[in-house]
Image (cartoon, rainbow, N blue to C red; front, top):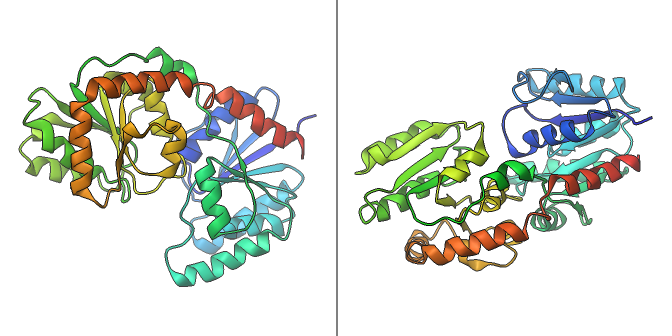
Length: 351
């Protein structure tokens, strides 16, 4: 008999790690009982309640910790799959008696202040005294974890994707009419630079539009930025887009200038549709591109160099579109959700 799986996240709101649980529901719900636990008291906005049990945690910090500890004690014989929730939660999981939890690394930033490094590093080291199965979603995120956190080798399992919706929208782009961004509107994503780059070329491309899909704290300031510019009527904020594959299929160039990413789901998704992409120089993106440097603009902090490479890419758009279409075929097997699910299932079976 298969053991129950408990997916633990900070908050059940749209995001890369949180949305991945939907793939696990589709892959495992017919033969396992599944649970989703939101450490923060957010409502269930993501999961089919008929296929997974959902529970939310406490509001205050200590209430959050205490309620989660009790939850672990209640299900201590089951399998816990932690989605990048940090060392304090991992340590609580171990102290509550959960044996060999899976810790899924979905990020590359572990602390920003020296005092946080002191106690978080200590929590990581204490957690490592017991058996934990560490999974990283890219070689890049694994290397950062090994360098900054613990001298171990996490198993690399790339984020999986349901290929069909993206391949149904796959095409060879013929011309530049719509430029787009998809993702959270938050610090570090550099969506303001996407708007600036659009404005750099909008005068030479009078029919070009910019479509921004996503929500976040920076939406009001980004809308104000667009309104101040000369092309406000050609910049469209779409909010959260449910059918993101169709969104990719509707645009001709995808620009993603994040300052840090452990993987970059949206970049891989866009490429699967044959969509030409231009990104910052994140090492994880190079894993997705498989060495193709035509898609990389450089460091977000060097706007002048970024602009020069962007304008050159626009001039070379037909070649960029051809490379994107070819790359979309090469990466299909790498990011096929079925391969991801098989790899995760093998880890569950070892418990």
